[in-house]
Length: 146
Image (cartoon, rainbow, N blue to C red; front, side, top):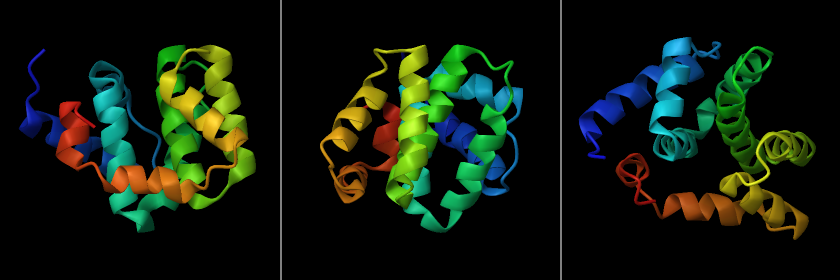
């Protein structure tokens, strides 16, 4: 599949505008997240890592969106994993563990959640995770090479 970076950046902007405002994500943006999969998930994580002042609103937006019990499991897995990554960076270990447990109860093989769960279990500091994000560009995340 060919990656259109310009299109991916425009789609990421639509999503992050809603996250920045602390709003519930629209179905259109949820569809983009799922269609783009890991690339868009990682793009959202990288964007928030580059804009730490927006983490609180992003976590709030994801929390509100995840409150919708009608969301498809594949959407919940992506959103809850992004939220867990942000909670880890923010130091909210209790909510982080709950989020990872939720993801793994839906998809026990979801690799990023598994990696986070192992890291948490072994008390890996969030700075290690954040440092890994430091070494990958936003474009690389969206292109799938991160």
